[in-house]
Image (cartoon, rainbow, N blue to C red; front, top):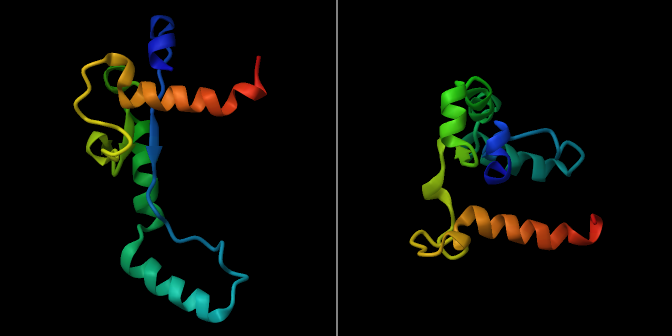
Length: 116
């Protein structure tokens, strides 16, 4: 996206807020809710922690936005090290094989039947 529109001064970033406990399981059996509560309180982020990356990107300066345009963020930082190496190789010699390019091509191939 950024490669196509940066000349028009349009940039984008993506983020993952992390796993956050919600009330999506409120209609599940009590035992499932109990087990979920144990997992949620010990392993998942709080709502505030999950919102932190979104707030960080919403308040980023214009210069940072241009610098990091097209990047993926997690835990309030660019998450380049979080990419799965089996899907997104780190050392690519061809710029058409970057994680961003591979993801773009995959997305286009998945949705091409829905647009002309």
